[in-house]
Image 1: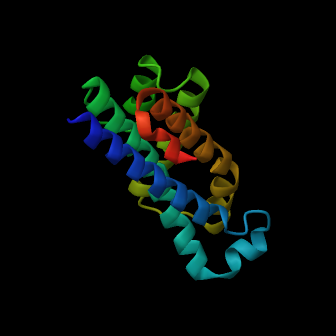
Image 2: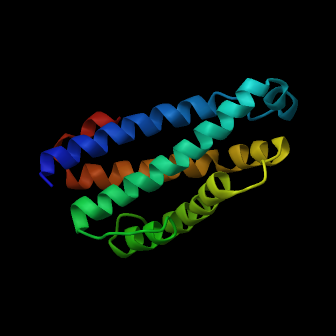
Length: 151
């Protein structure tokens, strides 16, 4: 793919991920009762959490395909290949593996995730979501010219 197109695609996805995580972070993650009080917010939380994680995984897949010509088929492969190609550190790869497990759970579970579990996942994984986004930002800045707009 054309490097400029790849760069534009990565930057667009990064901006969308930032917006998604900001919305998720705006939920009352410090208060369980407030978090579960509004059924609409609960549905939004599940949707934004799933889309946020999927977006981080898809961005990793895009980096692998367009920059390294590596095709992956499973979410669990993405962190491994990103670490092997020095996009993520070992610690960041481990975090993305955890997020990939949650993504699989949120998208493939036949059972509805309960409110307490959703709250716990959102609360515990928020920092990890931002950390992976920051890792991608670092890599994009190191590999593309106009990446300064990420800040």
